[in-house]
Length: 145
Image (cartoon, rainbow, N blue to C red; front, side, top):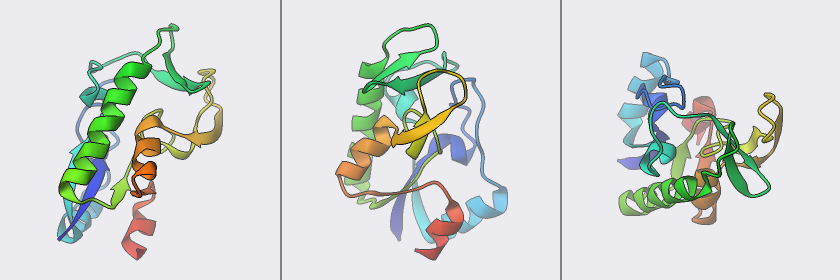
């Protein structure tokens, strides 16, 4: 069975910055479990950030919390752990939370904490792409591949 790296919050783990999750519908999770060996990861928690935590956004190659603290090192550790998991389990695909400073791919929040999106990748998505892992945010698209 093919391995799929997946954002833990999509599986219902309460690891979002606010302590919540982004759980996919149960029927989607069931289909994913039938098709893939799911490898959960929350790069932010894996990198040592607490749950809950202050929201953060990427700005000028760094990751900055709402109060201005530079949390780049924790995001880098989490990205390295996500990449190591993908390698260890032979995952060539990842289903990640969109727009996140860790997991976003193609669009992320712009660093102004205004809800504005901009072109870019979260740190974990960036690390995974460099290792030829295909990133998905839409599970419908994933089912077609």
